[in-house]
Length: 456
Ligand SMILES: *Cc1c(COP(=O)(O)O)cnc(C)c1O
Ligand SMILES: [Zn+2]
Image (cartoon, rainbow, N blue to C red; front, side, top):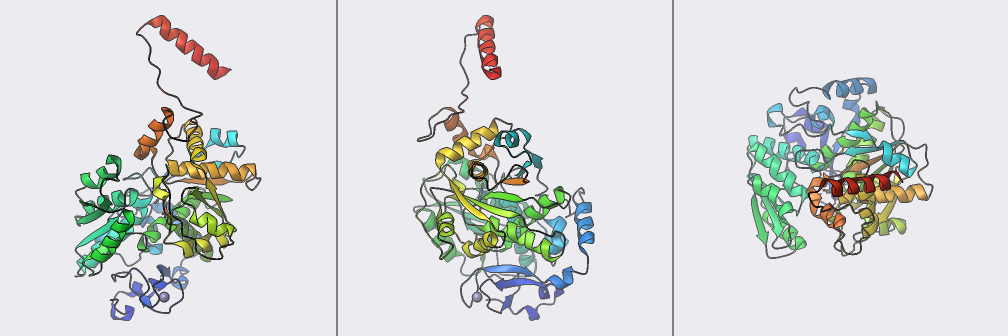
C-alpha cells in the first residue's frame, strides 16, 4: 500500500512523485512499493513539477550538466546522476548505486552515412556500458531507489525480474554492486548460455522454471506481491527515469542542438517513452526549442506497435511474437504502449518495420564500415534505409540511430550470418575465414586476388 506523500518528511517528494498516466489524481512517493495505479491499474510515471526546476534557467542547466560530464566526482561521473535533479532529486549520495553508466559515445557514421546518402548520420552507442545494453541506465535508478527504501526500513529484501537477456544482466550487476540479492526467472531450456551467464557470474539467484516467458512473468508478479521482493520488470517506471537521460545526453553532446530524426528499435516500448520524456522536459525548461521526430523500429516478427500505427492508433494491438534474430524486442503485448503512442504522435513520428533479412543485411553492411552492430540496431538501420528510400529522411537531415546493445552479446547471430547458416537470410556480405596451406606463394596469390576484388 502506498503512504500518502504528505506523511513523508522529505521535501522533494512534494515535487517529484509517481502519478497515474490515465489522470487519476492521487500521488505516490517514489519510495513506495507500487508499480501501477491502485485506482485504475494504469502505468505510473515519475512526474517532476516544472516550477521548482525553473529556478535555474536553461543556460544554467546546460552549464551544470556540461560541467559534470567530464568529472569523476561522485555521483556525477554517471551520465544518469549527472542529471540527478531531473531524475530522483531526493536520493541521498550514499544510496546511489552507480558504475558511472551513460556518457556513451555518439559518433559520426561517416562511411555508412555516405553510402546511404545521409552524410549527417550519427550512432549513439548505448551498448558501450557495463552489461552491454542501455538497460544499465534504468537499473542504476531502480536499484538506487531500492537501496534507499531499505536504508529507510522498508520491508524490501531483494529485487527480481523475468528476462532472458539484457534486463536480467543489468539487474544482476547493479544488485551485486549494491549487495542486494537479485532473483532472476527464466524459462528452463529456452535460454542460451550467453543469456544466462551474466546473472550467473554476478551471483544472482537464477531460477529456471518449467514454463515459457509469460509463465515466468506470472510467477514473478505473484512472488513480488507481498512487497518483500521488488519487481524490476518494465511496468516499473523508475527505469524510464534513467533511460530518459539518453536523449538529454545526446543533445548535450551536440552542444544542445536537436537532431532531425532519432531511430530506435522498440519492444516493450519503454525506451522510446523514456526518450520522449527527456526531450519533453528539455522543451518545458527551455533547453531546446523543437522536438526531433522519433522513429520506432520493429521487427516484422513482433510488430504490434507497427500494426497499431497503421490503424491510426485506433486501439492497442497484441500479437503472438514469433522467433526473431532481434530477440530482445520479441514482444507481442508491449507494456508501455500508451506512453509510446504519445511519443510518436507528439513528435510527428513514424513506426516502421523490418524483415529478418533486412535487419541482418543492414547490420552486416554497417559492420563493414567499422561497427559491430547487434540485431536490434540492425532493425533500426534497416528502417533508416527504408525512410531514406521513401524520401522521408532527406540528405540534409541530421539523423541519430540508437544502438541499444553491444554486438558482442549476439555472437551467435554474427557467426551464423558469416557462415551463411541463418535460415531465410541471404548473407550477401558473408566474409568467412579462408583456409590456406602454410605456403607463402599461395598466401600471396590469395591476398593479391582479394585486394584486386576490393579495388575493382
Ligand atoms: C530492451 C531492449 C530493447 C527494447 O527496449 P523497449 O524499452 O523494450 O522497447 C531494444 N534493444 C535491446 C538490445 C534491448 O535490450
Ligand atoms: Zn489511475
